[in-house]
Amino acid sequence: MEALNIFLKAAFIENMVLAYFLGMCSYLAVSKSVKTAFGLGLAVIFVLGITMPINWLINEYLLSENGLFGTDLTFLRFILFIAVIASMVQLVEMVIEKASPSLYASLGIFLPLITVNCAILGGSLFMVSREYTFGNSVAFGLGGGFGWFLAIIAIAAIREKIRYSNIPPALRGLGMAFILTGLMGIAFMSLMGIDPAALASGAN
Amino acid sequence: MSTTTQEVKQAEKEPLFGKKERRLITDPLNDNNPITVQVLGICSALAVTSLVYPSVVMAVAVVFVTAFSSLATSLLRNYIPKSVRMIVQLVIIATLVTVVELTLKYLNYPVYKQLSVYIGLIITNCIVMGRLEAFSMANKPWRSFLDGIGNGLGYGLILIAVGVVREVFGKGSLFAGSPLEMKIIGNTEAYWINTETSTMFGWYANNNLMVLPAAAMFVIGIIIWIQRSRNTKLVDVS
Image (tube, rainbow over all chains, first blue to last red):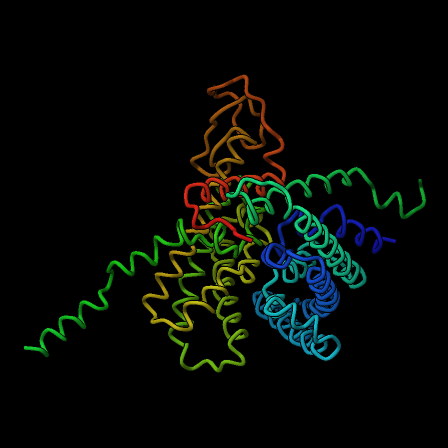
């Protein structure tokens, strides 16, 4: 039940984009149409869901003091985490290229850029600093990815519509996207009052 | 005669700190700002801008990493095979960030705690990687170094500007948590602040909106608005 709790929290209440600003680069750059946003969102869920458990295992069994080498190797954490993420992204890229060439073409450069999508590395670092167990880290990865997916779909849909509105020229595009993201962040904050633990235990 | 002029020209072509080099530093501060124009590197650091002091620390860390990763990549640029260049760049950046993390942990533990994962996230800050790809892989070490410093500063400038607005209006203080901390406006009872000191505008109640993450978005949106109204060349046509 704790895992479900963490999933809901990561997806809605502590949304990666809206509460922590993680993954803003691709979020702003790829959110011009819902279709590409959808593809990138799925890729992020997938990569987060895979890298989080792998990084958990690495952190627990290679880097920690009672791991394989018996010494504290946590200073290697950044390098190892980013290496895992980079190779996973390579894998996802190859899979998408085979499975859906059109999606591959439309994602273009942003697929390799998932490597430098802060949401992925940020997720792993949050996992370490919050000391999640293995199951919880999987839930956190999937939840965080789902939250990111929701946020990018929402902003892409809004930006598609807002193209027809009359915005001051200097605010058009990027400026408006920032302000919209801020408003969405406030909207998501209204979910803060919900207690996932109570919901999960059926107390409602 | 002609050889000497050529030599002079050669020498003039690449001065240590000429006009071109100066542009490398000043351009990213305004017309080519990493955040408001290039839209790179918004990711990691905005969450630290609710106070000025962590923003300054973050800005210094980013300048250090962009400058030295640009320098290192530029020195190695002829030896890096194209197919693995991303991994090589990431390893360079990750090493530098580890240096920054350990140094900060030693120098100032409270701020290290406060910045938590965001120091590590400099690795995936798109501006570092973006400059390595776009500039250092094709330019000489010294100019890459300056380009790194310029972009780091342009980034830090926005970070500190957002931090000042958010802290002054959200907490009524400036540089809270550092030795320089002071109270500017309002009757704040914020965590660090000595409430005995009197300030201007005692009637001002802190605007809690400014403490929320969303405020950083609004402030940047407004900065972009101002910048683009002043320089219409930057306006989005699409």
